[in-house]
Image (cartoon, rainbow, N blue to C red):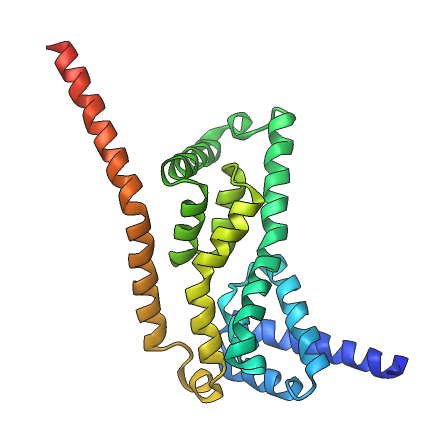
Length: 243
C-alpha cells in the first residue's frame, strides 16, 4: 500500500468519523447510515472508522449503543457482537482509569469532596456516599452489571464504579455482562439498514429498556431486601432498648 493511499484512507476516515459523530449527536440515523454505507465496502477503511469512533467516544461522552449499530451494519451479527462488545470495553476503560486516578489523587492531596464548600460540595458528598452504599450492598460485580443493564449514561456508571473501589477486572466483567443485551440488540438492528433508516430502535428500544430495567431490579432485589431488613432490625433493637 502506497503512502498516498494510506493518507487518503486516513483522511476519509477522519471525515467519516466526524460525519457519523455529528449525525449521532443530532439524532439523524439516516445520515450516519449513508456515511457508513460509503465506507463499508472497504474493510480496512471501515475498521479504521470503527476504531476511531470507539477511541473518540469518551471525549464527547457519546452513548455506546449507536456505535454498536454502526458495527452491526458493517460486520453483521456474527462478527458484530464480539467486535462491538470489545469496543465497549476498550472505550470505557480510559474513563474508568482516569476517574480512579483523579479520585486517588484528590484523596492523597487531601482535597476531596469534604474540602468543597457550599451546596455543590454537599451534593457531591451525598452522591459519593450513596454510590458507596450502593456498591457496599450490591457487591462490586453485581453492582456493575445492574448499572449497565439500567438505562443510565455509560460514563456515569463507569465513574461511579471507579470511585467506589471496584477493581478493573470486576468492572470489565460486569460491563461485558451488563452491556451484552444492549450490544446484541444494537448490532441486530444495525445489520438491517432498512430498520435503522426508517425508525431506529422503535418498539425494540422500549421493550429492551423495560426488560433490562426488570433484570437490573431483579439483581438488586436481594441486596435491597437485606438492607431493609437490617434497618428494620436495628430500629426494633433501639425501640426494645428504650422500652
